[in-house]
Amino acid sequence: MVLKICGITNLADVDAAMDAGANAIGFNFYARSPRYIEPERAAEIRTAPGVRRVGVFVNEARVRVEEISRQTGLDVAQLHGDERAEDYPAGPAVWKAVRVDGLKPVPLWGAVQVDVEALVLDGPAGELYGGAGRTFDWKRARGSGWRIVLAGGLDAGNVARAVELARPWGVDACSRIESAPGKKDRQKMSEFLQAARTALGA
Figure 1 (cartoon, rainbow, N blue to C red):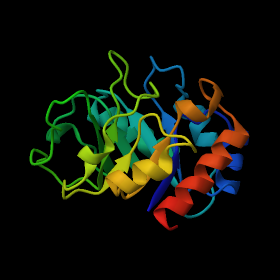
Figure 2 (figure 1 turned 120 degrees about the vertical axis):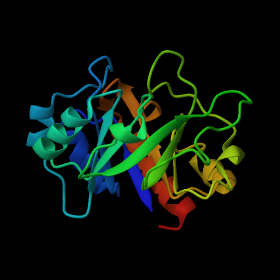
Figure 3 (figure 1 turned 90 degrees about the vertical axis):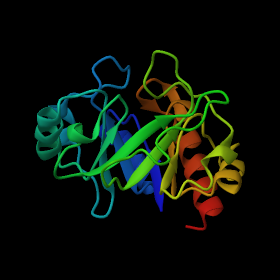
Figure 4 (figure 1 turned 45 degrees about the vertical axis):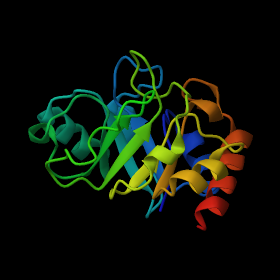
């Protein structure tokens, strides 16, 4: 199961996340994000063995995703844009992000044409791509047949309820455990990871 902290921009936050039990670290390579990190900087940030390195991309060219994946040692490419099957990179595992907005049917339940390791279900974000801190009806994540990484507005106060309702493979937190975009609040992050581990039975 996945305990992911996303939007990491510095080594100190990585170390704190790993110390608190995170087993996946997310680097945001979308240049318009306030949590953007240059690939060269991400490559310098080391993670412990067994901690998966996840890169967040939005409508990036396949060749560029593959290049950054090699440069930064990514285990997973998390795709948040309008990528089609032919845009999926070779090399890293692929997590396809899906926005769950209002009462519209959740897309991609039967539409993914290539093998992906998981779907990342995220809350509505308007013109943004992730990191908006908004939740959705977690019950809608159940019964998909996919591995689900639950994201969007999670923190220590709601992750147990989210896991109970969604029964996901993993959870992903970002904006609600920050003191500023890209800067993690150590206490909030630790409390989230502790609550998530308990809820997931990790």
